[in-house]
Length: 233
Image 1 (cartoon, helix red, strand yellow):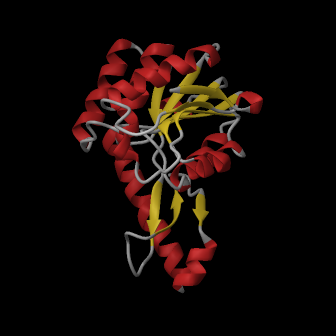
Image 2 (tube, rainbow, N blue to C red):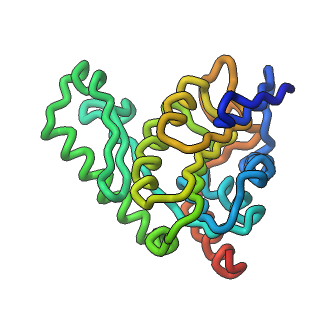
């Protein structure tokens, strides 16, 4: 294992060759929290991306003593094949579009708008389900830390970043356990700091770096948020 610090302090990278790295999301969150301690100053909010990012974000919020809220970016699937992501959108309509892929697939502007609106409606349904957004609406300065259990293409994280930037944080940080280098380079252009534990040489999928990577259910997200409220975090 080698720890590297990229020029400018943007990345914290733990390079590991082969094998699973994290036991589960709790383990990843605790290890990531340890790397974030030196950068935590004053007040801040951890913005977790459901559902897996909520487990990771919970550990970070507890360690730093920060509030936690949710931000819910959703991928926009092609109208011809929903498994093919052509972009991403957040609750305020901030949209990232892969125009090259849109043109290649022949997706019309009307089709794209319809798919985007469908996802925004689903985001708002989930926001209501989780009771999310209250902490972020009251945000009056400090750090915002965007957290997920890993990123692949980075489309959803990029959409989340642009929405979070609208709240004018003093520092906007992306914190993830694992991501490919090219995605981190893209996120680095939009975030003030990117903290990532593992940057694999050959990235396939986020789940391959966890021993346990079970799906997080809606009720688990609700339980975590209620526990944080009871703890005053």
